Length: 277
Ligand SMILES: Cc1ncc(COP(=O)(O)O)c(C=O)c1O
Image (tube, rainbow, N blue to C red; front, side, top):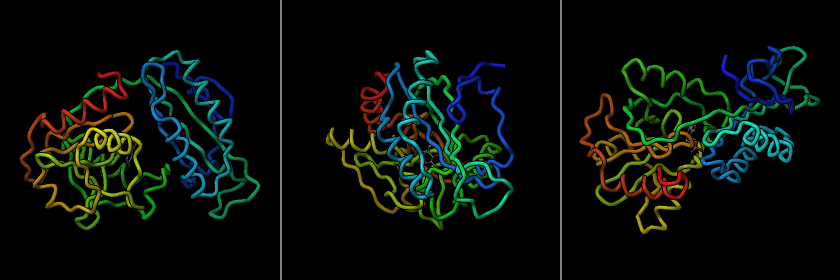
């Protein structure tokens, strides 16, 4: 089995050697939050923003994490891995119960788990499926409770799609593991931040960079009809970067492949964060 450097409750080892209790609340209740933190050419991308989002997720669930220790562990995972490009997955759970119980004991010790893997950051073209957003009302918390996303993305896979675009009663929210952008010939549109979407770090970095370059970005509420009129659609995430959508299953859209506005924004992002790759 491939060796993957990991850390569980501050002890470093091979990922496949870690044993956890089935009474971990991450396992029984998804009572846990996580981050995926990318690094490129040995440099972390927007590390402070990922830590700050992890802090918000922990605060929302009253998880008291030692952020100094977590930061040290993430940096150690990257330095000991010797990987040039990749990401760290880091998860924080409330801890291990004595017996499964919805109401947790205040004395539980926080349980942390992380690993580092190689990742190739490359431009992708994604086929996506439109679907109803099945999730709860706190999608702004980066919780490991992702069954709505998992169900939708696996249904999409059956239709040979790579991702989904979700909507709540016609109002567009986000991708299954990404944020949504679309454009006309000169303006970029994206659903505004709300408790219905994850405040994506890539989303924020991209918006800041392209606005600085003079491109108009409108953050608002959008519906499926708005998407039908799009000239280009993109999905953003820490591992996908800015990925263009080539086709939307079950929706009539006339997308322009390699749309000039997409190419411009993708170039701005890649030059700033991914060495222009
Ligand atoms: C539901 C969801 N939305 C958006 C994103 C993008 O967030 P980020 O750019 O911080 O990776 C992700 C990332 O996995 C996600 O799972």
